[in-house]
Length: 162
Image (cartoon, rainbow, N blue to C red; front, side, top):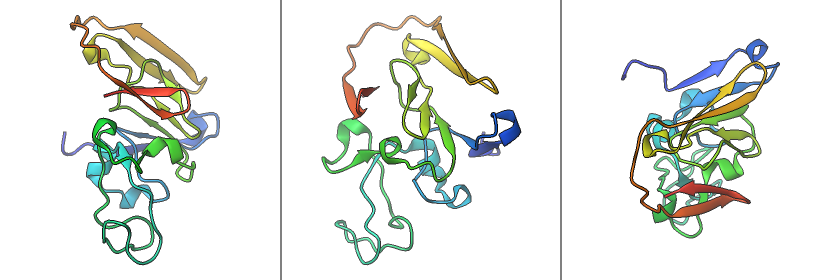
């Protein structure tokens, strides 16, 4: 697992001439993929807004993009002034297709697609079929007791499971 790539860029000709990047959890907006922290690519959730120049509200010095010690939180434990990364992602790295955070159905943010529909929790397994951009979901074969997990709205009309 440690030798696998942390992100995959798909050739535009395989994606109807769109830039598409696959990542496990997401990415910091505006940071070139090669400069992304592996932990963020695997675990990003809610983050604090960046503050270009000087120090941010946590005392970290800014260096161009984000603080060197940018932190991420599960939405359920995030500070009130944080935001879910995909809700403000501007498309600067192309369309980002990601998982890690469970949604009820595949959800389109402005420039990102959430595909994790909670198969391991007994919901469904979802996929994006390219180049025709077709979304499919099949029921999970896993039977998990319903835990009534709390849902959090991270973008208008888009809820993630906490």
